[in-house]
Length: 391
Image (tube, rainbow, N blue to C red; front, top):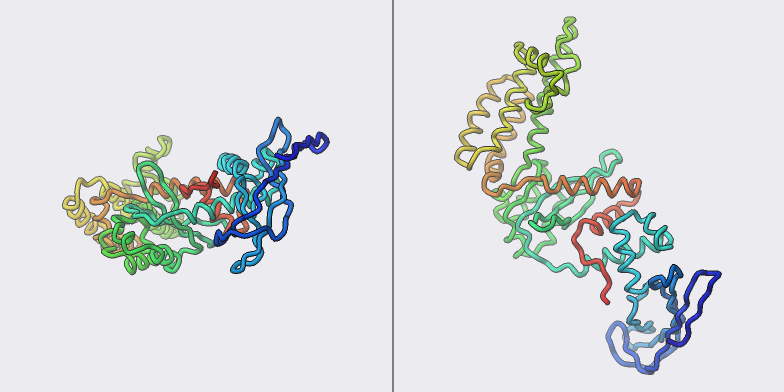
């Protein structure tokens, strides 16, 4: 240390650092060479008694025959950074716990400075990530809150931590192709199960890239129940219009009742729901297969599940209700994948939990106008990356 200056008015402690070496290495090729020039630089360091601490040094600039003029690396900060490694570690910890605006207020940073630290942390973490086998994966889409804009997410399911491994714009086949295309042959061979909804572009991508993908795709029960609920609601809407045209309001105000699981119908509506359900209504006929299908996931093994599905499928097709039959035929087409659920016991539940956390990030940031920053925030908070600069 050459000098220490206390600047009370600016609430700043300035530490000037010097050195004795005359030979330095090129930051690119490490070749030893003499100093060509000097550049005075400043770095924000950890605060001292609520005063900002700033390190100041004249940094040598060397001229390399291969790489031209290069500013040498200093031990306390990463190249081109305006903050010391220790300060960046603190800033990362603070931003992991609160919004970037809150971090700026706590640390005395501008928004651009805090965002720069975050972006470098994500780039650093992604660069350090080594290819590894990921046996259990979940694939889902996340709406960005503006019309039909989506992100495709791939997450790895592990006992100790659920991590986002891939984020891409859109929910097309090409969106997921980018993930599969980036894996090594060993990684592809190591995938044991992939949970996803039955969105056709995702299915095509997985079948095209993943060896034995047909035996590894596990449809998500939540989305199947969603499709069945939609079929019941479609039947109800059509029947309600016909009844109303004849002056019958039996189905008026009952929309939500048919979408509940039977055990979740509110007590105050239970008696009337029982009466309506006993009537000879198409909606009641559509509701039955929806409820009974829920027990499919409780089967003990593949054999029992196959037998249960056969009975359910016959009942659904005999309903003579096209919306119900449409979902039943879809399930029949994907029956081999449905049965993989009883082998791998994997659902999209974990990634739905991650989606809730991503929604929390969006609320904390009051939305994202920049998709790249949205993706960077997902990796920053949920990617399981090594974000910190080396010490």
